[in-house]
Image (cartoon, rainbow, N blue to C red):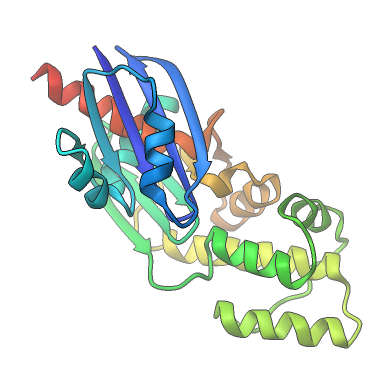
Length: 252
């Protein structure tokens, strides 16, 4: 059975096509201003028996692809993370506009979860805003944080106020590299606080687009006092989980 999962996120749309339990195709494009057009491009030419959507745009997607199933991001991330890291018991997922902490039971089922979806701080959007304020590309921003000998702590946890604070610090001659590390540390601290809402049991999996950031990987490991394990393609965890869930539903 060929099952397709699509994760319509705020910053990127990810697609995974499975033939049975084997991934045969994956793709990602920026969401942009017309997510439906992006979905059409990603789906063009693909053959599948079942399709399941998740992410912010899942309900909009089903309006245009009524044959699609929909599942929550929590279920999708949990299914994808356990497929990629079978022994994980806790999941940290940081995307463009939200972050999640998910606790799993021994069978891999969701036991408890908490989300931050009301504030940009602690998300990929916050990283992008701060990189722009410091005149870095995303790649330069991560590299700058890695070079910093120490962090310039930010006093504000609000993304809007933090951006103003960075501008003020620049005017006073503060090190851009140290501010870059300070921004990363603030996200790690918020992630640790989020994980305080669930029982944290190793193995801790780190998924979502921000899991590709090596500086965050290291800082979150330190903040939660557990090594975090990052799968080979963490950005696709929710799309993979959607595909696998669709295949499971189709077999029932």
